[in-house]
Image (tube, rainbow, N blue to C red; front, top):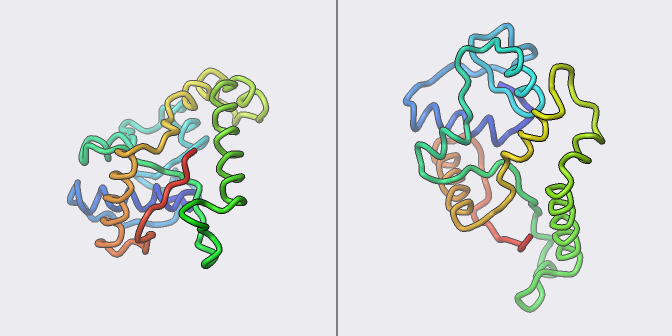
Length: 175
């Protein structure tokens, strides 16, 4: 089990325990060679996939969609309430609105310029520029009504199964 993504680790547990009805022994891994199965994310996943060392590869978000009919959201812009001053007359305070605007602009620019984004980073060995671009194109960067339902179900199951304590509610800032 990787520590690189708490949401991916929690999703793997939810899928195993609730939907696949299996209870594997989870352990933190330093090297995936020491295990029969591994949770891999990001660059490491893409590199391992290119090495073709794993005869069975399962996309967790795809399995979540197959089992629940809802998309999985792995990352959101999250903040903790700072007290009564966070919300002003039904709107979001200026600082939070500015952060949301900057994130939206960054997302939109990145999606229009995927080649430039990929060219700006050093890719891991064995990960081609084309694979990196295709991977980034495959990600759903939206947070619509179905995504919200998926998050609410995920949070509910994580809480019910005692995996962690997710937020009680989701308040959305339009990005």
